[in-house]
Image (tube, rainbow, N blue to C red; front, side, top):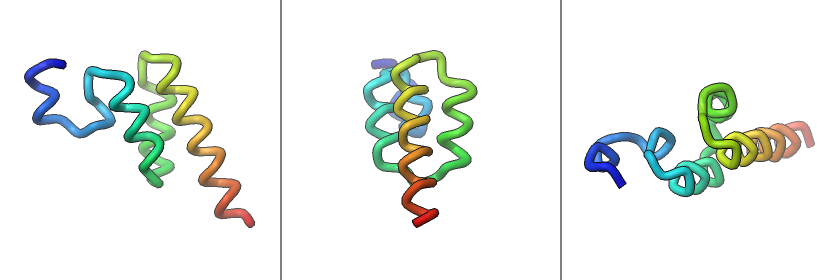
Length: 61
């Protein structure tokens, strides 16, 4: 963990597992899409894609 992690939002935390936990809790599809496009960790990107899909399916029903 970096010292700066204390001052940044969870979605830009240096630890990918912290970012994945954030993904699992957020409902902000715009932010999730940004994470899909910009995050360097494949697991975070995959988690964000799955969360977007889960949120959009829920809203369509």
